[in-house]
Image (cartoon, rainbow, N blue to C red; front, side):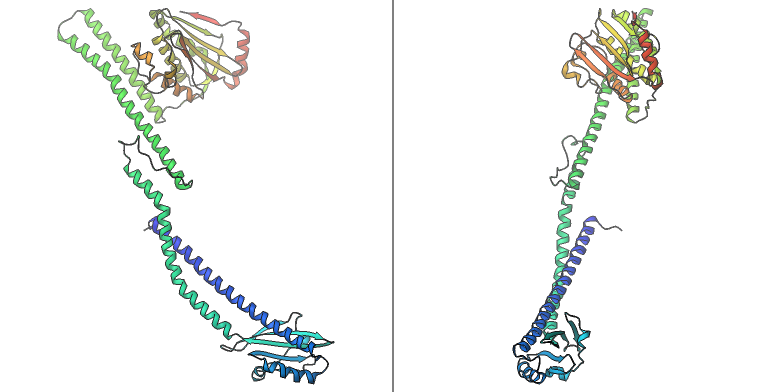
Length: 485
């Protein structure tokens, strides 16, 4: 079973601090030992220098017997625990301390010594000795001096220091455990705060509740901000579902009520054929309205689920515009609206999905028909440039207020003047149009003035292998063919 992250962090911190403490103790011990040996070696070097200075001051280099006598008199009294012996270049003894006589050992030849001398250790605990052998020249004669000192005091000092460190190690372990616990709690405190706040969030307070914003600028702060961004997306999705349900229920309630009302009235008493026909026409109109709304809702649901896929391929844009013109021409005639299509002659091949592009044209034309009054005018234009085709549908309708223009492509959103005009609409058409345009890698541009009309336009690239043909066709056409209702 895997341990909780707090325990794992505590163990990790404990191990790190413990290892660091032990390494620090070991390093301190060896540095102290090294310092003590350096001090001892420096003392031995000074003793060799004292012997050389003594020989020089008393001119003992040329008289071995006098050098031996005066060395015994001088150094015998100042022995003070030092190990000292002096030999000349022939290997004759000049002086040997009592300690050296008790524990004798041979001196090396002068030629065997390095210029800087050499350090040796001999003996066993507790009488270990560290000695320095070094040669010096004086008046053409060479002498070898070996001076040493017992390591008893040094070993005792190191033993006391080592025992003190061993007593400190348990305290280091305790402090490491305590520090590891404190640091793990401190490190995980923001995570605990995030977890507590996350448990408090539910669909009822999703709009206002957010995770705490950390100011540490570390991974936890990034996690908190990322989770808050995710909550905003979830809130947007939940709000969309709620709005979707509310608007769908509202929009479906009216046609269902109309259908039930007309059916009930038609069945209450016998009626004439014309009255039955009128009731059936109302029922059919409301059923068509419901069918259109349900079709839009299902389309958006499939689009959100990724089930709707746009397949871009060469499509004749002029033919699609002509079909939309033929489809809406009678509707505009009945409404008393002038409908004009300015299309180039010949094919205009663009990269698009034909059914989706046709639906985009139909949606915008339906809106133009709804919000353009009688005696108004709607123009469908297709322009061809070097590498793209531009679609534009303009009208002389009621226009769109500036504040509403920013939201007309949102679902279930209609302009305030559109609601005042009492025209039927679900507010889904332009959101469908925006989805189609986005999946064609373009966007719908809107220009509008309240009371003067609106213009919706977008561009699509020409099919790669037919770009030149489109330019030639445009060059050959001196004027656009105009189809008038």
